[in-house]
Length: 308
Image (cartoon, rainbow, N blue to C red):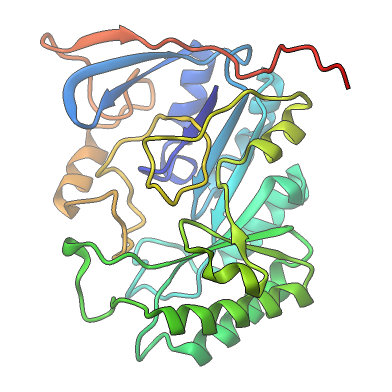
């Protein structure tokens, strides 16, 4: 099974100590986001966890724990977001130049195949216009080109709660113009560009569909074939394979205005106070009315005999 850590929050940035404690304990508890009283118990043995996919904007706090992951026998890779936006958009992040240094340090430590760069989401407005993205994307490419092989892009999705003066819908013509520029620029630095949950109109410009949880990449990391299915819990246009997410909504402190995983800044503050690095749950404790169910966990290792 693939463990996703996490689409819902930045575990490497804020909850890495908790995760390491849970890996040592051999299990984790997660709440169903649609039914708070429904709790799943997930076995974390490396025998059933084929790979951990980390999603992060700043894994600095995770760097000193990589040896533990290796010693425990876990395989993993990082989806690492580096964008050019300032604190008007991503108010909780460190200085971007320092984050880029962390990206390079992580890549040097685990290998550039295991650190995928996300230029995501692309925001287009009067402040962040085409010229801005052209200059900034090239600048970041020049710093990350020797430290990653792949860049995953997406264009900002405007949910009702995200409508602000900074965010607006991006037209197809604008996507094409940006896509052509990004693909051409990345190629100069030896970086392949893929698009997350985007339409096929970008294919002709050298941008294929991204599988952020990628069977081929996981197989190369694990060293064996995997029997995996597409993740039906994601959007129809998503190319990801099945995984179990261990994060929780309203817990990420990065403060990104485009975030779909935080509904309330007040909830984020309150939930953060309820986090216990020694706890079985990411946030809070198990209550009397909670129902704990053991999740059926098994490796995705393909045990079929290959004749050719």
